[in-house]
Image 1 (cartoon, rainbow, N blue to C red):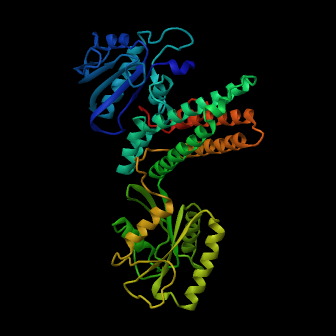
Image 2 (spheres, rainbow, N blue to C red):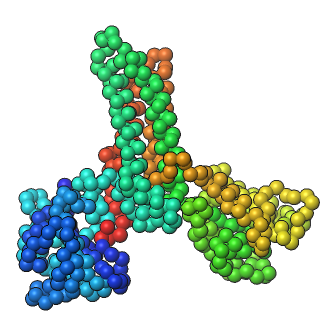
Length: 468
């Protein structure tokens, strides 16, 4: 471990502000000495003890619960001390100051290269200690942050699945199968003089096929988990008075945007996150797209195009009452050209026609029909959004995942595909098969942290809150 990773650390583990309970958490080696200095007594492991929290003069700062978890049987794998007091900011700061003061009188660490002295923890450092001490793997560590940040019930339940190790177990099983196949290939390379064909007798091709099938299943679940975590950004675009703000309000079930018959009412982006079957949908209402000399409206239109450029899905909203007006059709055609130029081929555009309550012509234009006034067609639109995003809950349930997990799994798939090609070639290139399997194993290891750069760890844990 690096010296800073050996320092005992402390932080307020509860959210900033006032509350009924606040927690000060400390993790490090040999914390019994600190407990003795603060309380003048020992604490029974894993038992909540109600007692005063004294200052240096012995006067109580507060009364509360103290819990001591000796390592390695703790969250971080080190000794952990938690002080549960009343949740006032001043009280918690006084407790932190007392702990830092008490630590100056004891040696909390032993042996080089560890540095003595208690310090305030960095964001995510308690969870990082748990990872470094093999209490959790990297996927589980990320699941802790995802559970805290979950914006829907489905995302929270999926994060709990990952925290419990469901995702990691699937990765470990696949890694073990891949290692076994590597062993067979490398044994054949090491003992070419043997008459026994290791690969044929062990059905290496069948094992590789099964690995690819297992990967497809995991990748499907991980993609769904990433969708639950990230959600999709949906931008509503179209001409003025098509009903964009009304559609936002209808989907959100609240009057978020101002709606008037006056064209150009919306001058800036209005955003709201809703959930459909547990999937977060980040909906953005934008200014009506049209030529304008109004300075403020032009700024709003520019921001609309910025939002469109960052969209995962665009709802191109049309006014059914003007569906066959020549000037309206021409303006929509111009917007369609600009959308194609802005989005490229990878961002889907859903054509939506609003105001079926006002007019249902005999000749219907292509697209999805709805009425923001009556709600007709909204369920169909919700289903279309999920289908466009690729959402379908797998039968085996969903574990939370991140885009980096999905990308790593895709790299594994590419390496397995190359290994299969080399294995089935007429002149088998077993050294290339072995190398592709090794690279696939490393890509799997990136998910759980077996093969992960320090830079990536820094990025991941820096996004945690302090005290976690």
